[in-house]
Length: 342
Image (cartoon, rainbow, N blue to C red; front, side, top):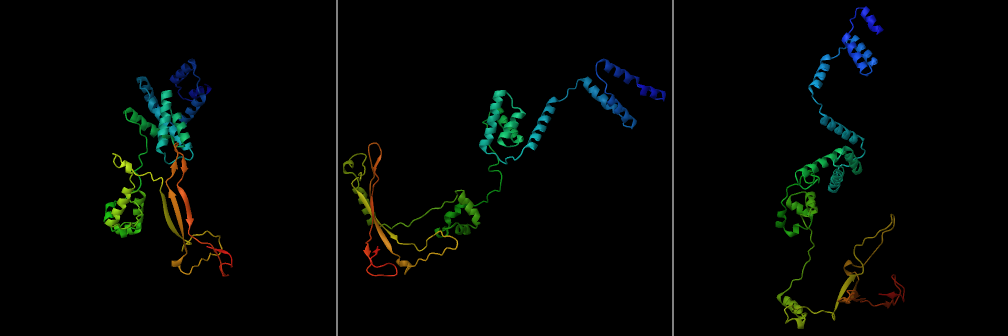
């Protein structure tokens, strides 16, 4: 007040209207911020003008009853919180599986049915549990709500499968049937005939568009051989069931199957595991076409089961080797005299 009186003495006019407003504010119980008034006065002295037109516009807008858009402010606040939560997150997953995406929807759906509404902190909680961004959770939830509103079945699976990545090359796999079989023994040979890279054809093999089979040479059967085999099959029919509508074969419980098998004493090429620096084994024969052989005879029958379905006989009768053990008649570099020999 003293400063204002001194200003009046120096020729500065006092703003009586401002004094009246301040007095009314003080009467209403509002304290006057003298520091703020001092700052405003200093700003005015430095030449900074106060925009009274802007203040008037705001007052007129308030008087005309224009309400502020509170919904927009809430959305902006939620978006800002989501961005802040994303910025505070650590390592985030790049992709979510379809089961994880459905789990996010299911958790938020349960919260909505329980509380009536899904809040931002619910999304933050789910995002923290799944180790993903809040925006990812929001996108999944918004997609699910759109489908629910339209009465559709909720499907929040990823749409990237089949829509991203490099597209496959066009290849007519039907041409494979026109290539001779001797050119189709390896993928490289088939790729050369088709005029495509080996890797492209190998990818199609991995996608089950090409199949690998093992073919065995079958014996050529003359008509007499076929008739003989047919007679053998007819002889195995049960005589008591031939005249019935449903004939059947014999039970073959009194039959034993016998067969022999030749085995080489050794193979031309063998694989061994040795230590570094260990000497390679030496295996010698007089001729690779005259490697010693041994024959085994095996007899098997039909397995037996009791009334309770338990196995009582597995059908294995035995295996015998056709060898003769004799003693060495004289000493040699391979064995001493009198030792066993097979």
